[in-house]
Figure 1 (cartoon, protein in one colour):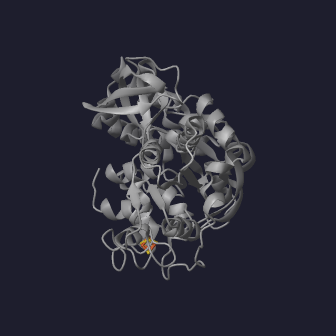
Figure 2 (tube, rainbow over the protein chains, first blue to last red):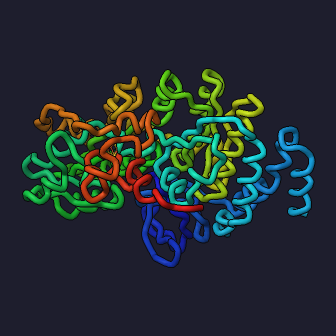
Length: 90
Length: 363
Ligand code: SF4
């Protein structure tokens, strides 16, 4: 029930209401809880309200982190897996 | 945005391999406390894919499921008040209360409408001034600011026929009850994504500091979840419990300050009864004095029937992670999604429903 769907703001109408694009479908949502959002931004929408701005930068960083994972636990994993992972991300 | 990267089978395999090497033959109990995680873990077959020693338990993550029979009965009683239109998220309609459901009341002529957002309920109130619209406010911190905002809007517009029955619940107090439960040993919490979007990570710190249990805020794709699990496993192995945010694309560490201010403006903490967990001090949210005029309980004082619990349903134990859904004797037999006995089988996010739907899912 806490589902929140990434949506792109297409236009901002009056009263902090916006038209957003959710995977090709046009919906309206309130920007009351994310008043700093601008046209073109991605937001997470829950029950008709944007609840969070999504930075594309953040998405890329999260992915980069996954690739570093084996390196984080070097002690437990031993050298070989870390080296393997380095090769893959190189 | 490349969501597909978070479903990458190669990366998934890589993470599982890392996890396997990290865990060796250790055993650990990790609990997810968000219904959306429960569904994702089922859908991608992760419960069986993780190393044997890693037990993934489901906790009280489904808002409808943790709602007490009394609160469901109260919603049903609202629908019987003359001239009241009940507006609710769809999940609530089929949930059994002590003797009936909202859905059954609708079949008997009660005015009950399923809405996707409290904004829809506001719209009904604007268009139908002859009806008193009661929105059933069920949900965790993700939903509180949304419902709170609808009350603020009603106040700004001077709407006099919009009301909320507030049965909202806070996540952290329930985690504390589970951390204290002598019958379940939890080694790490997979912390909810969109609850944390609102709250940030601060409310979970006590888990690591007081109880020595780590937690990782996690997204909903398989790579997100396995990443969260691997980080938790590392904390267990290294005996360094901490609270981490591994879902920075959806969660700021401080949460959403505008949303938090909305919650603070509209609601105030109160004790609340949870299914399975009993009364937890200050875990509920009632409507604050300033917005009392919008409180459905104050406005209608409905006649609520005495509570009767459903015989044989083990939802309470399921919600605490004391038993897995398939350990309930009714699971899949007397109780299935077509004929649900308890709320955990009704809501698609309920643990029983998710285990049933994905019981044969391979990775
Ligand atoms: S399987 Fe059905 S009866 Fe058993 S705990 Fe789940 S919802 Fe309740």
